[in-house]
Length: 265
Ligand SMILES: NC(=O)c1ccc[n+]([C@@H]2O[C@H](COP(=O)([O-])OP(=O)(O)OC[C@H]3O[C@@H](n4cnc5c(N)ncnc54)[C@H](O)[C@@H]3O)[C@@H](O)[C@H]2O)c1
Image (cartoon, rainbow, N blue to C red):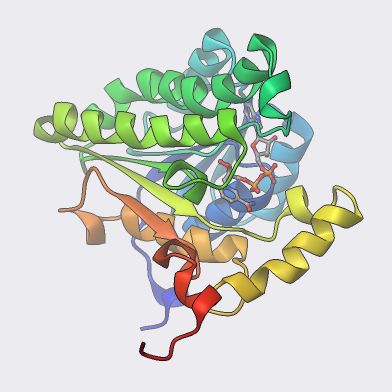
């Protein structure tokens, strides 16, 4: 069976926080193709509406939701419950990443990245948890982390937030396993989205050249991440909880062989 023929989400509703662009949008498309009803939650309402329009033929609702604001998250979840009666799968994908040299980092800079990336995911999970517990199919949270949360790749506040997300995931996996809710992280390597392609020649050059560091010879596409999320959110992953899965073309294997070659010494 090709992945296109999978229908693991028939009758299921998925809430995606940060679904208007890039990886979140690709997750929406993948899950819709597998039969899901989608809540496209984003602070970019126009972008969310555009994704709903792309998903014509599937059930999809755009909701305004800024994960930095607890009330906005609560209202977004309430709108989803009004429309669909509840939801069993949550994807947390919203984030912020900026590059301020470490010695110049202010509290404000630090919190600008930490708040949406870590606290925002926690707020969204908190608002969703009663619905995930109530889901007749069991609940699943898939949080989009990063290889930055697993090793040193720079971007300290963003990376610390992504590392924190792994720990939150492991704790919640233990706390809510008995209530039928699974928690996992997908940790992407470099993925070709607007954050690389639309933000100036340096970033574009980086993403073009990054492939040489990847054992699989290319950077990721949003669909590579969506495939892993679709698996972890589905019943195929019914006995998987508390993991952080790198989806990274092999970059987390470590750079040493790439630097020194593969000949035995
Ligand atoms: N692109 C990469 O190379 C890469 C690598 C590792 C991890 N990731 C992770 O993948 C995820 C998606 O990244 P992307 O490259 O698709 O980025 P993107 O900017 O294309 O998409 C992010 C989405 O989140 C939304 N968003 C941002 N802040 C929000 C907020 N406060 N409330 C609600 N929505 C908000 C944006 O409007 C956008 O729709 C992020 O969690 C990112 O950390 C990306």
